[in-house]
Image (cartoon, rainbow, N blue to C red):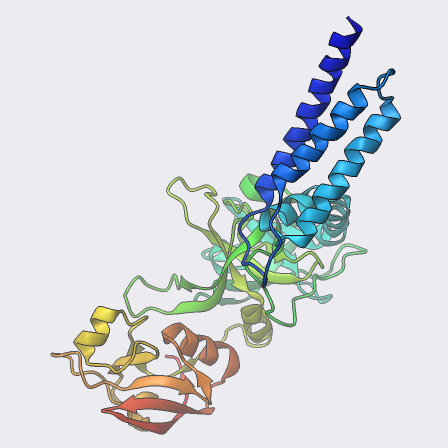
Length: 416
């Protein structure tokens, strides 16, 4: 009986350790390899576990609890050392971070700090959305589509206090709007807008808002993609404006989250939650946020003037050039923004940009740089114009035209 009991204890302990080793070994996959990575030798570790457990089982007395724990820790230390020598993995890092008490403490502290500045907006007693306090003067940033067609705005703060809001400015193309209350509840600090756009795919982000009217809801996700575009609600035509540098996230965003902040773990606003892609009307893991770059540039103009004026070239472009289009247009490369048409009398026409022949699609200018910055596609050109230029500014376009490279100065107008 004693021998059977020892075998039973041995088997249970061996299986537990074997499962641990195999689980950690399974995680050791899929990151770009560093030079000469060390392989994770699962078989050697399992053999060592077997040898040491057999030795322990042959003792007259069964190993004590302390001795078993020491054995487990010793083996796990060996496993971690092997993993440290091997290429680190996304899976291992993500699991460690997700389980980290430090992350939990960061999130709870972030919520306590940020949530008081996130508001619930009731529009004309028939719809609602989210927003956040932008400054101590009582300006509140939200989405244009939240406030559109509203006649009255009731602002509900996290502590239950309510204020009447008035509309200060809107911009349909960026889907941004600003409301204002006469005063803020005591102790509320505006949320800081990120001063740079140094986001990375995989970075943790947090959304706070009021999905389905559930006030003060927080969700965690990652940046799923960068440099997306969001088509303006102004119209559905192929030539309607698309906002560049939009952030894609899998942080759950649902109806009612619109206008709320997307925050990094430092509590800075990196985006304004705006849209989801869904066939059901609820989150499906693909959400979009207006970038902080747009907030920094557009919101001050909405506060000062009630509107934002975009720089304007007066030209239409191919979004991206496929290999088939390169052949059809007779272009030497696919990198660049291809001019399909120019507006008569507009800035592009005055600068002498050459559009493609409407019958053949050939002969248009291919813009490959603006002010020395490379242009891979229209999105690059659009981003530069939207976030680095102003009405009346002259930019230098580097273009390929009929086999020649030349620089074309163009003075930007105001979008009509």
